[in-house]
Image (cartoon, rainbow, N blue to C red; front, side, top):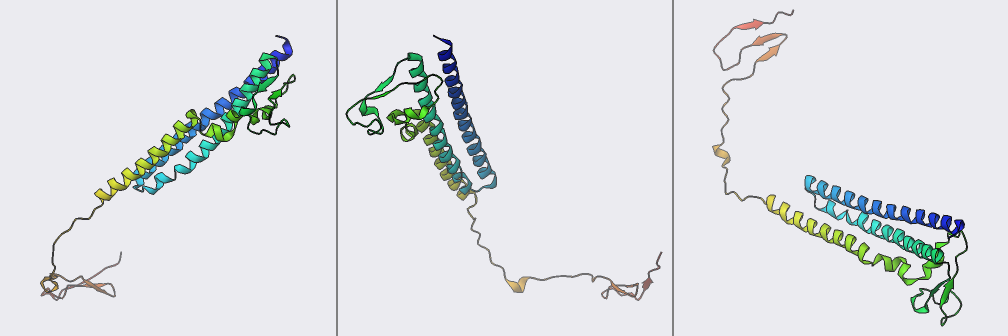
Length: 211
């Protein structure tokens, strides 16, 4: 293997590694955000907050499929460079049949040295964003998270409804039976002079001496 091809493969491998790291980071952010929303909904006793987790799940699902789609294209590019031969693909596996001008001929593509154009491999059905979106590795994770979100929402609704259910108490209050007994009246202050309450039999008046 000559030096140019080795360098070319290193460049492609570096891009593949970055796509793989981004995909792993997206999965981590998805789990972190959804777990935080689950905990917040349980703490605040608001089941509707759980449904907000569906938004980041769907968004990261599409983004993860986008990175995996590009990663597959770079993997095919790597294989084409390493094999040192044109990529030939049957027409049945091409997403756009009119890409090479004929619907009956196979698709062939040769990769020049240091060429990083991965979009040439987007015509493959296996590399399309829609097919990657439905792949087992992507669909299994995000679809299971959607199911878990719905189950937690239903559980919180049922659990909180049972806890907040009011208790019926049979009680009657007769207003005529309510009596307020005031034993003493608060003292009155007139011009810095304290007077005794009216219900006490005393005529003593205490004068406040300012300090």
